[in-house]
Length: 242
Image (cartoon, rainbow, N blue to C red):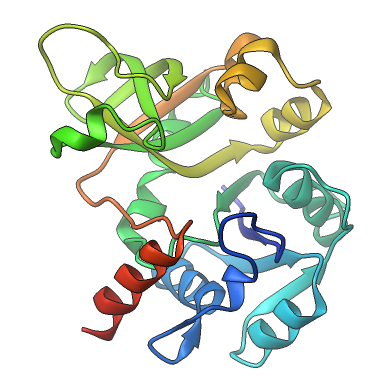
């Protein structure tokens, strides 16, 4: 499948303003993410942003960028605008959306996100990793996957939640915010209006599930650090400096 890797980035983070350009081991964070994507070797990589500063920083390190509108409410909307501009003849079949705040992302995990799309019934694929720290099981900042197991390394997503779920004995899975879309699935998704459960949980992927779209989850072994706070940024600096 023809694959395009898109990395949405904006400066207006509420908890860590300007974080795409935060210095980590001598490089802006967004450049670290682009490098991890490049190491996955899946195809063309483009950073989609509404900020000239980000464009300048990314292009200075040899990566492609595209300027998008400033009024997008989500990364999905931003990458859809970028897709339409970059591929007007619709040759791209698969789009990978990588959040711009995952500087420690394992390149193998990026490639793993494509595997569920081998099943033609799957429109959207994403990643999960088993939660091993007890405090993360009850932390609402850690999004959990409720899914029906398909194999030891894959499940069909039934729900995503900030609560501790599912109940009972067994593993809990941390959702990694990286998505692989079939083009038709992305087109359908961005045309939907925000759903009730999406607004309640503050989880955009619930919009797709409420609309009856299928999301399968590939289980991986590596949990990337999502940088949302100054403390996260310091952890990322320690990890990547070593």
